[in-house]
Image 1 (tube, rainbow, N blue to C red):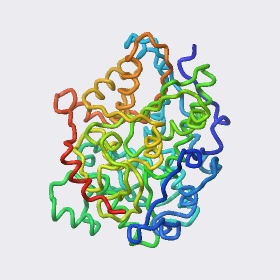
Image 2 (cartoon, rainbow, N blue to C red):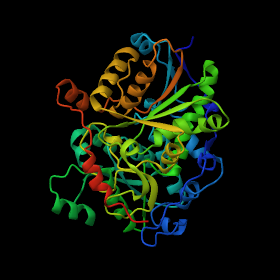
Image 3 (tube, helix red, strand yellow):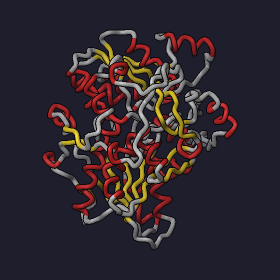
Length: 447
């Protein structure tokens, strides 16, 4: 039996898969925050290039991956599919556990899959500079890498708590030539206003998005790039699931359960979506989205129209949300601290295709340590959630020979400060109180 399955460069998918036409009962359109009417591409064109807006609204099932994008993706793609035999042994389970290793990208996570595509479409339309937000720094690193490949300037607004927790992410972004500031920052009206009101705020992705959008909207040479949530990001990430389908076939296995961690939804959707047509044709697949108990948008949020940011500048998206005012606690899985969930993932939870579960950070770090000791790779705190989900599934019935496939979205070699805190006993479990969620939900826009 092969421990890992590697595809050749010429076996890398040449097209992305767009799940939106296949979602039962479809997606509701984004709404203009001012008129509350469906929003067309012309208004969004102020912050996104048309190439990406066409993908955002496309009803084509397959979209060609440009050759220039393929060439850069081949630096690390196709990524390996690995059988976690040592983890299986340690758990004493008859389940087969496979993981798709997205930690092999230059920036150590799946985020580069969309960053390269977004940088390409911006470059093609003459954009000179991109702004973005980043939580844990994975997306900021990925966009910094991608913009360096296409000769575009990049400014990253990094959530304050992660800016302080993860200094080497900043070093990485600097190495690729990007400019990074802690958010909220004194560089935007939004940032200045929030700093005046809450000088000690840990920041949030919602605030950082507001700042990056404001920056992009006030400069003619600048567009904005988002690392998760939106349809075009999920589209670019579908390369993960498309490759895994070929690899599972070579392994002579088929997944009974597909698992990923859920923050904004892109890495989970990237793995899960290409399997959705099989599911709709009657294949029995259980899709499990694993989110942190401290930011439980799918398990405790509400399916509603909401803003993607604190300053209420984004289009209204129909998604599971904890409310755009929600400021999550500074747990160490910074990439999962977002108040809303991708409309695509939200629609599939609505249709009971995806089963969301919430887990605590201590059990996730324990799962990550076990994975490091058995499979040798130290996972990012976000990825630990997916590993925990896989362990839960594999140990429900140790004699069940089910096949589990999960997305290993990134390694944790730049997140060792989080592990230090775990070993020092400084991390705690945190359930977000229902009354706090109710408070932030009270401000949902009235549609």
